[in-house]
Image (cartoon, rainbow, N blue to C red; front, side, top):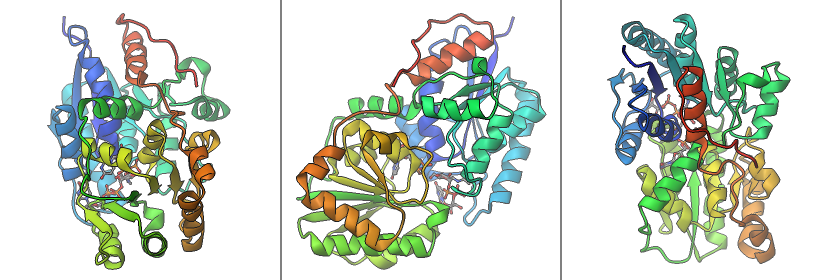
Length: 378
Ligand code: UD1
Ligand code: UDP
């Protein structure tokens, strides 16, 4: 008799980082279940980096990425491609994470083919369907067709319950990015950016809501901080999106205490986070990972679906206003007590065992026994 088949769908850098621990965990039970990775290829180089880091490869790669791709183009190309693969593979379960267009389409394709769908990092909400755009829509739509919901925290689980999702379908697991970041930090002990002296400020920004004016304001604020604090150095790993790079290189490209860089592979990026004194970011994953190392985070967004870091005191929601960024960063760069209050190492997003909990639940759903994990208790 053939084994049950699980398909994990990924397309972007965070999809791969947060799904890799689940794939690796499921493959520990390869005697009981086949686990296949399907990539839409919504990202190309940035996805490949993650596959290499975790020793993974796509079993099926739709390779859809185009420069300047629209949301509709990503949606159509990914849906058509995933549907074809589901028809061929006929999996017993499909897994995707988070809120990218690949994830939304994976859930939709599973629904159309009547394949049970498991949603990793379920239940994050801002309450505004257009912010972040289109991610809040993507994750809400995925929830509608999800059979097993894996919220990272109790807060995310409560969001799902308040939408009428039954208790039995929800398991709080912690976020799989904590599994990933802890594994990678342990495996790659070398420091990074050793040639730079002084305090490193790490900046990442790529969100659609920040394209244009807000990103110019973020970059200008960073310049002002460099002027105010001569002992600081700004490290800017640039997302591959040409829209983002044009703004960042235009404003920050010629400063001698700025390092603009190609996106570092995940292990290097993790070292860079650990090397940083302060992080300015609009990234979801970075907001989740930085508290594990006790690095204060200023969130360059108007809303966050990750309030746990703010509540725990590791993160502050600042937005993209130049003055607000300069003021908040100045406080942290001058006031030791304010800095200490935000730099306690704690991990409100998980304990590194999320993938094992997900594996147990998915295999249980398929009628396969495997060792249980205690639920994640914050
Ligand atoms: C996507 C996700 C976003 C996530 C982000 C993580 C959607 C709608 N958006 O946004 O939720 O936070 O990924 O990074 O799913 N590019 C490359 N090489 C790459 C990757 C991207 O050149 O490896 C360039 C291409 O020109 C591409 C552009 O970046 O057209 C935008 O990529 P896209 O996936 O559409 O949007 P992101 O902003 O990356
Ligand atoms: N990351 C990386 N290299 C970089 C920037 C980020 O490996 O140059 C990692 C980061 O540690 C986190 C994930 O990518 O795990 C976040 O991805 P991104 O910021 O692109 O997307 P988001 O989380 O906002 O959806």
